[in-house]
Image (cartoon, rainbow, N blue to C red; front, side, top):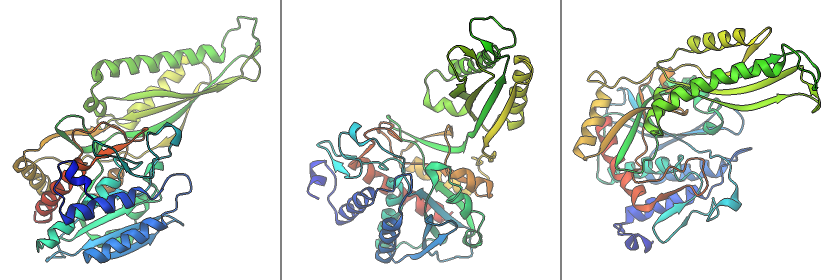
Length: 406
């Protein structure tokens, strides 16, 4: 690992081990569809042995292991700390990548190119390597710490964290606080999500008068579709005006996008129905019933027999309270201040496993220590710099100590 010195990193044995483990983990192609997690389970079992952690694997669905590594605290009756990440990654188009996405190549600037380098194999290894440093320093925390590696997050998480939080095994962990994935930033800020938008997929059905396309018939599907499209784009424009390209503002406003339009059988025949799929993300401040009521009103205005089919509706989740009543947040915030970290709290625009934890009554924060990092989640050439990766381990070492002692 001589390249650590090349990138002005302290080439300690701990850093070498951390980087070796990160590269090994990244080279496991846990990509959808039909993910094979067996290499991950074996790798994590090996890590548990090297760290002296308790190792468990639970299957709530076939081929979907939930892996839990436990560092017992000196007072295990206290509510525990859970550190979560997911093993699965999204698909890739290899031809578009600078390096092969599962080779974990490091370029001349120290950037590690691999699918999962930002989302979220980095934080999984950082958790473990932070614990390695703490144990090497003979640190003993009052609270037990559980490091979870879950499947299925990239396709909704129902077979992963969604099932785990409903289990007896999860209940027995007595989780009092959790950390999960966050978002990289290109400046010196660290984004902390304390809530997230709910995701909803709706199909708008617009039936209409059919006939020859040469005629200007009334009550056509296209006319009704136009009314709904106009309403959606008015809402979209209003949100866009407030967001104004600011990533951190996305969590505060409704975002809607048309994703599919289907209808018709021939180019010269008016369709008897046009169907339009709409993806909507609602901030916690907007109740689902408000969104549904608004859509139903638009359908009524569009014309006879227009209706909304609610296909996918994620349950609303509470936000995590960020005040003095939350001792884990106080410990997190004070430690960040001591480390001179520039924290910015926000509502996550997308979805994460935090929503399952929050619904289960566990206060959870989304945090990934990836500052000065270009956002590449789900994108071509996803990468993370070696120095940023190692910095994250140091940050987690301090944070885990603080929240594990709160």
